[in-house]
Length: 310
Image (cartoon, helix red, strand yellow):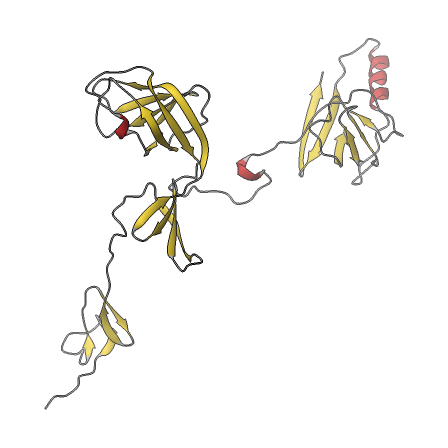
């Protein structure tokens, strides 16, 4: 008579096989689903194409006709997969049409591409070449047409190097041939770069230092219009520090370099009598015209800096 056997789900490695009555003691590539062992499924390659870069995100969606798509973003190129085919939909930053652009070296797979103006590329960037004409080289137009290449080096602002799948056995050639070169929009590194969190810098990692300048003429205790040598790097409103006093301003006239509309003795600071009087006092005390130093300290985003003008 047949009798149904019941086994507890999971693997018990803590006891012997004899003691583990009604339990599983070992397995390989098995998971338990609803209390029953099930073989873990494997992976099949999706499509025959090889993708450029390391894929970091996948987004699935349907179009209005119900066609399924998968958008795959690598650190190099943005793809869309549908119906067994990968489509390159990466945005193009710049398109160059160049002549006399290819240079090769004997027994080398390196090709130098020369641009008529600055290209702005960095090592690791991606380009796609098309409409290529080339002669006198092992490499033919079919080696370049509708092909993507990674920028290996940037010898000069107007040249880059790429690597071919074979070496130059003819030629070599120097600044020969023509091509249309599409420069892919750069994405980012394939590996995560450590950071220190948010700071007071601008977006893109640029850190803007405090704005500094000097007084263009003396001020006394009554004025609220502050004449600067240059106010171009100052915001439309804010606070500055002259000597030991904080002074606010509500307007910045960059044509006259005057900060105005503010108040004196801001933030509990002490009113300075006059920078000009200080200079005169130093002149009288020494009996000769001394080397005068005018101090202007500028507050910007909580930072404090001092500048001396001799």
